[in-house]
Image (cartoon, rainbow, N blue to C red; front, side, top):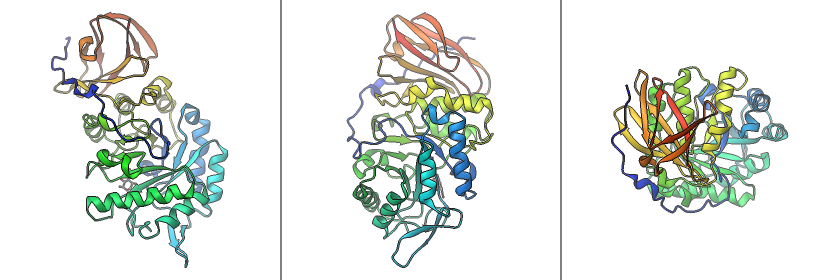
Amino acid sequence: MKRSILLPVVMCCLIFSVTSPAQNNLALTPPMGWNSWNHFAERIDDKTVRAQADAMVASGLRDAGYVYINIDDTWEGQRDASGFIHPNEKFPDMKTLADYVHGKGLKLGIYSSPAAKTCAGYEGSLGHEEQDAQIYAQWGIDYLKYDWCQSTGSLEEMKAAYTKMHEALKKTGRPIVLSLCEYGWNKVWEWGPSVGGNLWRTTGDISDQYRVMAEIGFNQNGLENFAGPGHWNDPDMLEVGNGGMNEDEYRTHMSLWAMLAAPLIAGNDLTKMTPYTVEMLTNREVIAVDRDPMGKQGFRVAQEGPFEVWMKPMADGSKVVGLFNRQRTIESMTVNFSQIGIKREAQVRDLWLKKDLGTFERSFSAYVPAHGVVLVKIKQK
Ligand code: GLA
């Protein structure tokens, strides 16, 4: 059965609003790396981080663009008499660890909160912002995820707290990417760049289930005006390779995040990847969609029930199109070229098959697996 997508969504999204430029000239493409939380949560320590860094290189992820090794919550120890924070016993020497990670051609990220306690109840940065920033810089930290979680306060207080850390980081003179995490509670996309954010979580926590991933990913539609070089919407870290979704579902996850120009922060155990997981995380053509220098976030152009057509404009004038099937059975889907601003004839390339499919007139159709995607690059002839 051929299903034509009949309901074009208003193409308002082609008008990209002007967002403030990045304040620190970092993250001109969406950050790529790995974070400890999704797979290891509290079970993260120095040895595990080193093993992940080794695997990042050995698996080819580094060479595909994944450079940040980010330690999430639970590294924090006590403050000394002068107020400087020390890591807990799981991390004997953060500077040596940073040197190790840097020696592999990678960068090191860390986590804190603008409250007395972090989300997991460890020591937060409240009242010690400058000292923490100084220590991070001394250790050689390159990325900070700053999680509102346990904080209370008004929107103005939230903005002030983020600005304070941004200023403290700036004062160190070390380039440190600032990742805001306030779950989209206060429309952070509207003010994230003004408080120095390079990226900001737009949602609650992801988990390794199709239902949760799909709800988060497809709900990003409408936020496309707020992303761009230096400041990105962050629908949370990847679950690819953690085992809770099948291959078609993970392909949807990866394709959707790439179309969203989302940070690609792997959240699996890099030391135990199947060849399939490596291939999925390192597909250069899909990564190139995410990192397109124009930095436009993709959006939905048509929807009919569980069938969604998304489009991402690319710097070379081509359009990347995702045909997403959210139902549990295979279905034929179609994108009409008029829905993506293409006239008559176009060349179509399948980015997962890495194969040119030929020249098509007026539309392109494909069978899309259950919970799956067909991701193509369409170029006007
Ligand atoms: C929150 C964040 C997660 C993780 C945990 C750590 O839940 O959303 O990504 O950082 O805190 O405690």
